Structure formats: C-alpha cells, structure tokens
Amino acid sequence: MAAVAARELRDGEVVFVGIGLPNLACNLARRTHAPRLVLIYESGAIGAVPERLPVSIGDPALVTGSSMVCGMADVFQSILQSGRIEVGFLGGAQVDRYGNINTTVVGSYERPAVRLPGSGGAAEIAIHARRLLIVSKLSLRAFPERVDFITSPGQRHDGVPRSRLGMPGAGPVKVITDKAILEADEATGEMVLAALYPRVDDADVRREVGWSLRRRPRLGRVEPPSATEVRLLREVLDPRRLYLKG
Amino acid sequence: MRDAVARFVHDGDTVVIEGFTHLICFAAGHEIIRQGRRNLTLARLTPDLIYDQMIAAGCARKLTFSWAGNPGVGSLHAFRRAVEGKGAAPLEIEEYSHFGMVARFSAGAARLPFWPLRNYMGTDLPRVNPRIRTVTCPYTGEQLATVPALNPEVTIVHAQRADAEGNTQIWGLLGVQKEAAFASQRVIVVVEELVDQSVIRSDPNRTVIPGMIVHGVVVEPWGAHPSYVQGYYDRDNDFYLAWEPISRDPDKLARYLDEFIYAVPDRAAYVRKQPGLAARLRAGERFSSGVNYGF
Image 1 (tube, rainbow over the protein chains, first blue to last red):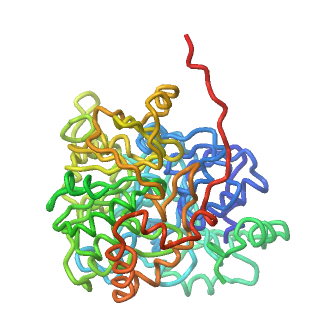
Image 2: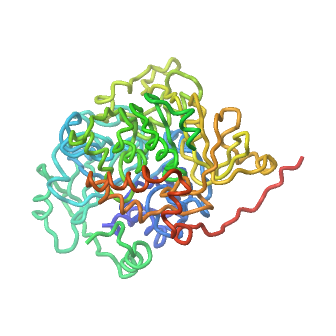
C-alpha cells in the first residue's frame, strides 16, 4: 500500500505530508522516482530531507538539512491557505462514499464509542490542497456509506458539491487501499473502483465497502511492489516496522 | 520551577504548555501536578503525553485542543477514558483543527477578538463547537470562518537558551510558541541553558520571545524529556511507545505518577532516576555556519 501510494506522487511536486502511512509513502517516493519532491510538514519543516524515517511529523530529523523551518502560523496561512500545496496526503479511520474522512469519533460526538485523535491539520489540508490522496486499509468498518463525523471534507456534503461550499482544492481524487484504488467520479463525486491489485477481483473489494460500489468501465491493474521498493521499505525506511504492519 | 509554578500558575487558570513535538515542557507539567493545581483549562494543539498525565492527575477541568493522540503510537488513554465517560472525572472539551488553534493564538497575540480563516466548510467541527462561526468579508462579500482569540492566563515555553532578562532563543521546529507567548497574560520560559546577554545579542534573529513579555525564567536541563530539544537531546521514542500500556491501565498510570512525579522533588531527581538518558539521547553535532550582522 505504501509503495502504491508513493507512485501517485510526481517528481518536483509540493506535498503536505500527513501522519502515519503517508509519511512513509512520501519518503519512499523521494528515494525512488521523485527525488525533487518537496516535503512540507505541518510542524513547519519545508523541503525536509530526513536521514531517518520520521517517527512523527515533528521529528528532529525533519529539521536537519531542510530548506526552511517556519512557525505553524506561516505553514497554515502563507503556505496552505494561499494555495501553494499541490498534493495533500492523508490517512483515515473511516472514509465514505464521497471521500469524507473521519478521524474524530466512532459513534456520536457527545457520547463516543471510540474517541479518535481529531483533525490536527487534516481538515484544512482536505480543503486547500489542490488534490488529495487518501490511504486506508479496506474494511467494512473503515468504508461506511456515511462517516460518523466529517473531520476532513470529501467531494460532497449532504449532497452539495465541494466547489459550491467554497473549497479551493479538488478534494480526494484517489483512495489507495490494500486491495484496490478508488477514484472520484467527476460527475457524481462518488468514489468508484478504478484499479485492482493482483489476485483481487471486484467482489473482494465490494465485500469490504459499505455502499454499492460502482466501477470504471475498464479497470487498471496495480503493479506489485518492485524488489527495490520492498527493500527500501523494509530495510532502509522502516526496519522497526513503525508503519509497516503484518 | 517550584517557585515559578507557585507564583504564576493558579487553580482555575487557562494554562498553555506549547511545543509541537519539539520543546514540550514536561518539567513544568510535572511540577503543576506535584503542586496539586485543580480546575485548569489546558490548551494546546496536541495534548501529548504531558496533558494525558495532567488529566490523569486530576488537574484539568477542560481541554482545548486540535489533535489528541500519541504521535506514531496510538491513543492518549487518560484523555479517552475521560471523554468516553469511563474516567474518574468528566472533562469538558473544546475542539478545533490545528489551523483553528493557530488562528486563535494569532488573534490573542494581536489582542484582536477573533481571526478569520478560509476553513471548516464541509466539516462537522462547527456543528459540535459553536465558537467556530463565520463573518462576511466587508471587501469581497465572501463568507469566512472565524475562531475566537485565545488569551491564556499563563503560557510555558521550553527553549534552548535565554538570558537572565528572558530573551529566549529557539531553533528547530517553532510550533506556535511565539503567538502563544504573546497571547498570554503571563509567560514562563524554561531553558536548557542560561546564557550571557552578549550571546543573545550576537544572533538576534534567533530570538523568538523577547524578555519584555517574560515573567519568569527557569533553568531546567532535560526539562523537555521525553520530548526533545534540537541540538541537545533526541525525542525518547521508546518512552512514547511505553506510554501506551501505561496509560491504558489506570493502575499502572497511577504508579507511574507516583514513581516519576510525586516521589521526586524536581527535574534533577527525575533525571538522576534514569541514568541512561544522556548516553541514549544526547544529540549529535550539526552546526550552522554563522552570518555577518555587521553594517
């Protein structure tokens, strides 16, 4: 999933890196096909070139050798809100039919069954990044028809398209999972099946999605990770398995 | 530290111990716990382990925040128990996103009543936090989100160094400390090293907090552990991992507070209790090249 996500980043792009798997994917991309990727972390590290995999988005290795370190007011106002982020990259506990993400609560807000960490910078990344990539492991629990709480907005809110709500960015264009890639349908804003991993079929994906998943007329094939990608991930980037589980 | 907390942190205050992963002043949080402060409103973007400990110790009535997790590990379980209704005491919460919290401090620092931002459309945050509102721009007619100023009674900032007047220099991640300090009625800076004023004046661009807004300077080496100080010591990631099972179990958490906070008189004793810290975490050397301030 990390390798597949990394391939979505183009060399030279400016990417706002979220916590968790996006952090790993961005650092893999920088060490493979996108050496000029500009990594921006909400902690204020601009053009980070971490020599070790950052354990968090505030890791000291993000500072050493970076091109700029600024305060968080600058990050959110002058870099994100001003439209300078080309790609936002988020994970999510729940992702719904329209790519709305929930990282706040499972259940009701007032009496949550599970309290999650909340937005952090995710809400504004989803609003402002020119395009948004989401990575999340496929499961019925993680992909409900409608999330319990919209932390970070997707393509539609109560049926209203995001452009009508005044959001500058294009929103979630792809959801990268461990079995398939979903893409936002341009007409309906729905996440639709766009590509399958090897040895996975339509039905395997549908079983793990809480809405009647539509599909592109022609599905793409996701290439398995190359030997180089696997080696970098396991031996260089994440030998302690901070992000790579199982 | 004992005197600074006794003098500047009072029951019922809104207290901000800022620092984004970097420079979180655990020494101040521990002293506030030891002195038994109650009914505090704790505000921070990322409550982190320090507010989890302060919530567990019963210091907090309310938490104002934007991301409450253990970065790269999982949950803050004392926080979760309180919010999920399984804790010893209820905890009121007021929740924003990071941008919202940054904007609240920016308004507070400028002594404006609110701060406008293009944000929150399509999210459920304004539904659960009625203090996130909107304003119509008088120039463009555009509707913008607003958040209210945050002006805490006291802000505590950890830093690499300051002089005796409180002119404080920080390098590495700057977080929102400058805005939080300027927004605050009282400011305590806690530093790894107290330096002569000539050191500060040799590199004034590195000063983030001027002495004119500082009420107390505390010298407390290793005062940010298990957080980190760029150029001094690394983050104790092993402790952040260890916090998961400790905070998950209220009895283990209580034993932790007893052993590492209540049973030690101060930070020096806390450091002596953990003899391997320097060998494990001391920072390597990566010096910057200096600049010419001449004219």
